[in-house]
Image (cartoon, rainbow, N blue to C red; front, side):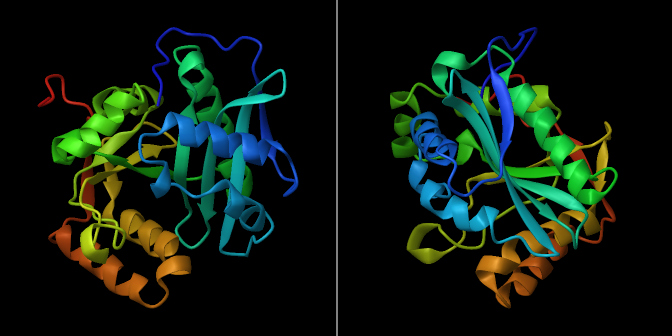
Amino acid sequence: MCSERGAEVTDVTIREVTDPDDPAIQGFGRMQTEAYFAPETLIPAGHIPSMLSGDTSTRRNFLVVAEVAGRVVGGALFHWLAAAGSGFSSFLGVERSMRGQGVARALHQARLGILDRAAGGHVAGVFIDVVNPSRMSAHELERERRVGSNGWDRRRAFEQLGFRQVDIRYEQPVGGPNGGPVTILDLLYCPHEPAEHVATSLVVSTMRAYWSPWLGRTAERHAAELQARAEGREWLALLSPAPRHPPY
């Protein structure tokens, strides 16, 4: 969500939110609504308190915020998926006035530390799905422009943090046109240690674990479809999420 090249965080506090009544939750909600062009696709702040208090042995939810004088200027909402041994990020963002100052990198490092703690060692890595501007409609691109963001810039920022695009066609099972899949997203992965490939089994088990709470039994079917799209490959390449000359 922001470029971090050569920047340093100053006067910013990074902290984990654990109290469901912490006012930073509402601040995070306001920040993500202002920072992202399609806030209706994000988890509303009103759902976060129950997520933080609804941990299970297989899934834990976390919120980390960046604050300046008590005001939330950035944050990350993410999940530890014990069945897969990996993390999945629902959102990481920084308000426009604070971009380019290292805030996103500080949030990301805090996120990896918390996931390591949840894993009891080293988490394999963290996944996130991100829109691909080349598959966005003219209306969606205009919404991006109106909030002052750019999809390719966002993907370049994730690349600076260590994320790479998983070489597989990815679909979010529901939420698209007429209730069908969302097809404008790519799956990105940041391994704990730099790598050029990710195991197909880790990708499939992560998405199965992430989808299960809200898709129920159909999560297994969608995971099987994802597995089939790997076409027998045991390892999937990790590619640049932001080509040098994107198709604007």
